[in-house]
Image (spheres, rainbow, N blue to C red):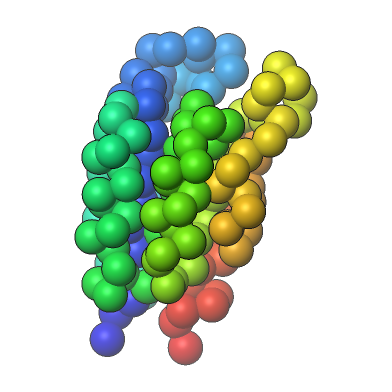
Length: 146
């Protein structure tokens, strides 16, 4: 059976390519998802992607992944630094979790240096641009596909 991966993007990532391109690049979220979908198929993974600007919606998506998905790749955006609710939802999830940040959060404002999600993540990729999503999928494939 093909392992299923959920790709979650948090607030403002729908503006990727438009919002602060000097930090996040010119690639749109649709561009990123196309690259991820193609790579996932090449790696033997199936992929479903969601984006929400609402914390509760992200929590619901994590809940829905329980028992249906082998892994979650999550870029929680600003919720990385504020959301105990997302951390709690991830703690109730029994699959692998990869956390992705397009920018290097450790080179930015001090409040961005801490991520609640990292406490649950099996891996954290930061500062590799949108390629971080692809790196996360490659890591998951190495763990899930035999």
